[in-house]
Amino acid sequence: MHTSAFTKFMGSRSAWGAGMVLAAAMTLPACTDAQKQGLSSSYLIVESMQASSGAEPGKLGGTLASDVRTKGAIYADGGQVLLRLALKDPGTLTSPLEPSTNNFITVNRYHVRYVRSDGRNTQGVDVPFEFDGASTVTVGTAGATLTLTLVRIQAKVEAPLSALTGNGGAQVISTIAEVTLYGTDQTGREVSVVATISVNFADWADPA
Image 1 (cartoon, rainbow, N blue to C red):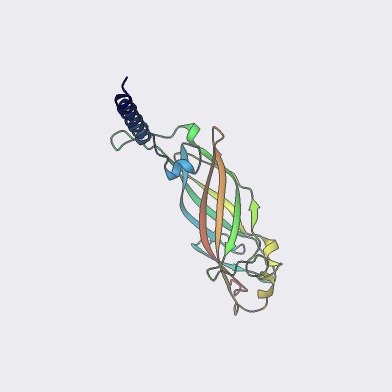
Image 2 (cartoon, rainbow, N blue to C red):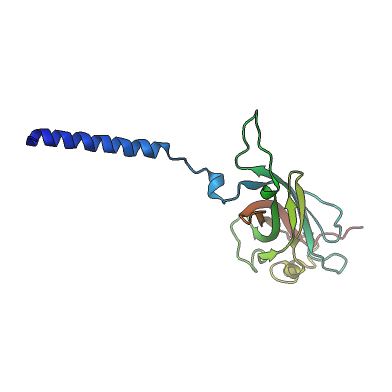
């Protein structure tokens, strides 16, 4: 083959090859954010989070006034997270998919971390220490409520909360509790979700 003809032939092959690579790249499926977060085909939605003082566990609310001392006693404060199940591939409007029992998610542990809006987040100085806890519930098609400890008794006898005792509510430490829930679907694939709630620590007035 003549040199100029050969060069022209090879150039056309290179252009064709580059075009095929580009076309192949354009047809590769893209990963969504939900897929990047885990391998499970289902995920958790936090419908709401509420909490209650340990001295009045029946009074749930969207913000917790955590009392460091109540009539001379110390109580742990509890929380409740209302959870719902959803599929990463929900199907279509005309043909929606329904979760199977394999998609059900069992939550079995959680982590609580406190942060302040002013950025002063040193544990044991500005905010209570973060901690891990265990609580189990399986979230299916009907949803479920997970109960947990939001503020431990230990936190109320350690700094910085212990310094609030006897101040009559004159000093308040305002935080946001970040609660990360961990679990797996029924095939063992890991799932997690974060719930948040405001927690204001003080030596509040005792309930009547």
